[in-house]
Image (cartoon, rainbow, N blue to C red; front, top):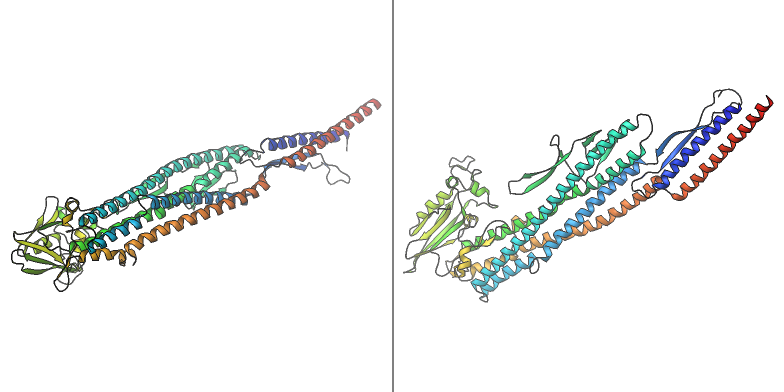
Length: 580
């Protein structure tokens, strides 16, 4: 081996030492930089020209590459944990807000309001409350329901605002990642790793993971595809973009959807804060709102079911339905799919009948007429169909056929019923539920928590409240209707899964409380998992200033040794030249 070769070996050692010091310096400088991955300089010997000859030496050392220290498995798990934590924290926050709304509006919660309402009817039956008190309590309950639903709906609006902002931010990040893909692919064509650009991309992926659960597929050129579930949202240097859209349901509700901007392909968000917002909009707020409306609907229907067939000693001389029929719907069967008026109701009448009792107010003579309501879904020929089933117009004709009774439609489309002078009437035994469905002589109007209200003429004239009813023997029980409505508090309701109106809401409130508690536990657990994985990542990719200080000393000694080698070779070369 010649002296010149030895000097070249020393020169390579100097260059490698300088590069190593630069890499170490960069690590120390970025020790506190979030998302920075520690870099190492990988050295390899330079093969000598005469490698096969005995005693042949190499040609020094070189840096093969400068690489980030990254464990892709840990990075993938960490991004998943970040997504889970963001989702759990969002769930905990939203469920806590719903729990707070259900428990802090007005005086007590809805279960208490419902109990007070039924207690007032019980007290009316016992004669310790007036009809005005019953009407007032009904107004208080309906106002409470309306406020409760309004507050829950405001939560939905808040979620929609958060979704819009989060999707907009996600789009920005997707664009950044796509641009970084292009830059990385261009910078790594020479074989060197674009460490700084990859760090930036990992930081962007981490933030994106907090919004949605993503997975990545890396290509040979260093670019990555990003997928949400099985749907790609980034393909190399191109972002497909995301959009937030809403679709309306038949019940007036709306569904939030995340779709790709370029093809409107739906994306199922399974994690991150966006996934939690979409899920809670349906399963948190959506379920609670649906339960609230279902309970309000059943409250109105069942109270009206008894009130419409109730009576007082004086009977009725006039009443009307609260449901208004469109002109085209009056001649359509009540159970027809084309009847838009009935389709808008949460409940429909059934095959059966009801009775009308007419009373001569002068003589006290009574007469009872049964009105058939044919809603069996069969034609007169016995074939499936509603062509021969009862219409609203059929009911008007049947009522007009009762001596002393007049029926028709008002200008608003409401069914109106009046008696001739000297007559009063009352309804009985409505097995078809048509009177309650159409809200004839009802206590409540409306079908949802937001529309529920006490009938306006009862508010202005509480004496019109019906508290009595006819028993099976034809005797007037003056508190019969009040007792029947009071018993609704504990009466099983098939539409509510066999629970009573009060217990059904208690179950809903309990379910919300359980979900909120579970969400808080999940949030704490997910934070622990994320912190654990960040610790694992720090062990692999984090910068230890102590370790880097040792590396710096090592490169310093290497540099000093290489410099001494070159100095010795130079002295020897000078001696040789002097000999010549």
